[in-house]
Image (cartoon, rainbow, N blue to C red; front, side, top):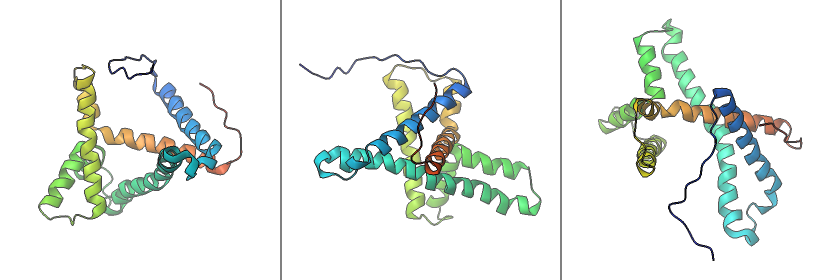
Length: 193
């Protein structure tokens, strides 16, 4: 008989260095692409119901999302820096540091929400959805810690405040995997641990 066990605990080995973490993420991205390529015939196939119309399309969407959003976010961050600071000779100042702090920390979402609330920025659908998605990530982060009985320490608060750079790093790795896949769509997908 099969049944759900809510209190099951699984143990795993996590990467202990940045390079092993990067290799792990790259393997996961390549593995995802390999699964999508191998099962392309399932995509929107009525016989596979939820898998063909929901799971695989969502998975494929996130790879496409990384190509589009990765490029847009990097353009916005560094294009904004170039347009607002660099062309005026302001390479590094308090305003430049504040600009990047707002982009790469929770302060940016707080500031964006405040600017929309006081009508300093017109709330477009994209901005509102960005704020909602970002704000919903943070309660999930806290919930995960509380559910598993972890105490939130100084390092965790730092991660909490600067979650966006981690997201950008994941997007960059996924973007790089996509570029590699686009260059050789029929090549072998070998990688090492």
